[in-house]
Image (tube, rainbow, N blue to C red; front, top):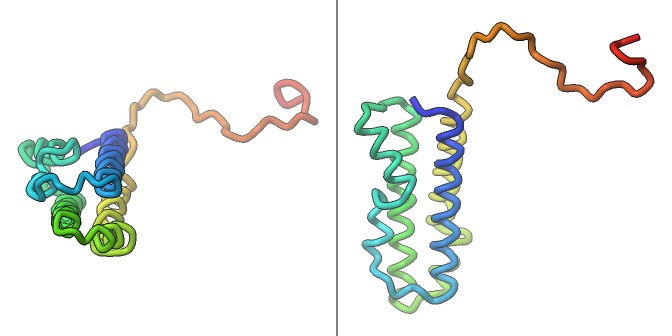
Length: 144
């Protein structure tokens, strides 16, 4: 089971890849091979999911994220094919409001849901929880 921190890093990796991909399409780097977008296992997030799979991770959240991840990369390959065929406007529309946009959002939400389901570790240190409220300036030191 991954930690919250690992899932936060996974979200970051997804956002980075997505931003780089969208920049490449908008700047005209649409001539690269669509199979590169389909090879989801070569991205940081894909490698992490492959490691989890090899380690036997089989939770409902993992399955949901893996499915959304595949959908996202399929949608990215469609964007590349559109751009490579000269339909740049349609590719950019797909990025903003089409299947690619929906798949990217669905993946981010699935990762967020997984992170929310992961319990914070209980270190059992026995220390009391410190208050998180701002001290009252009208109160003397140590509550006097």
